[in-house]
Length: 442
Image (cartoon, rainbow, N blue to C red; front, side):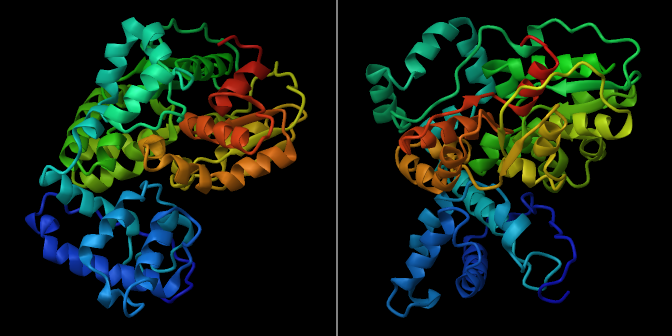
């Protein structure tokens, strides 16, 4: 492997079940090895706040080198990593198979796994990560919960900031009294091009409890194209838990979901994930956590992101007729966890399938990073990281704006407002706009 090689990155399985993984001295040695390489390279300076924090830490030390940086000061660098994987996938020239063997996100994950084992994850953060439980609790009280979550509600949001550390101005996802699992299946068009395909939609926590219209739109599009669908949501994919370093809990979710989907795969169903973060977990992260589990491998190979799946139909069978032009430019933000799936810009490809499409692609980070961007200590930094995206939308003034990540889309909208720009009509996901072109009500 030579520097600058065109070989594809290789990701090694996580050795989280080995006791050496939790050796703090070994971790510190590895962090210093990798941080020193990053210090000498600095290609990732503009990706997220982890790298500026690291470089400032070194530059402001007595020697201007890593040798005079105290290991106790590494924590803010780790805290700023959102596990977006963009440094590994798009920037770093030293990822495996390079001999430097540099995997910055999984280094941050190892640090967090040790902190989790030591009990250093705040109680509030643990509760926020229980997305399935929170969704089920909020479902019967959705109107009340949404009233409390509204950023204009100074009473409840001020209390949430002081108790849970969630910034009072951060836009938060709302809950729905109707889950995607409870929605009726649409009638399948019998003579459509993709007749014979069968797919199970992995509802995901967000798609099930927060915004079922994404799944309703996806099912409507697939039914119009002849695809029979079912909706299944055995458990959360575990991404919020992974961010906290609770790898064992992620593995437990992975085994549960794989066991549920296995029989569907055996019956010839494809697995379609509605959220890019969840698709990434099923396709890539779970096989690195449980590399010897055949059920995980089978699920990984059968899973597609929803935009990837519809584009695949367009390329292989062709799409059903009946779409009409939406009119106006569509700005498409490519979410980091969609890009990390290494499948290409499927959201942009999907939007270009619309009649008379005029698509503007945005590949910059939104700054949100899941739950990271809503926290009091991170919200303003998250807006700063996402400012180039907001400025681009303000400048180009598209009629519509979509992101594969609904949370990123909400956050970007706040950034546009802060930039005194006009927030375009925003759909929760590209498939919602696509369904609208078909005249499908969601």
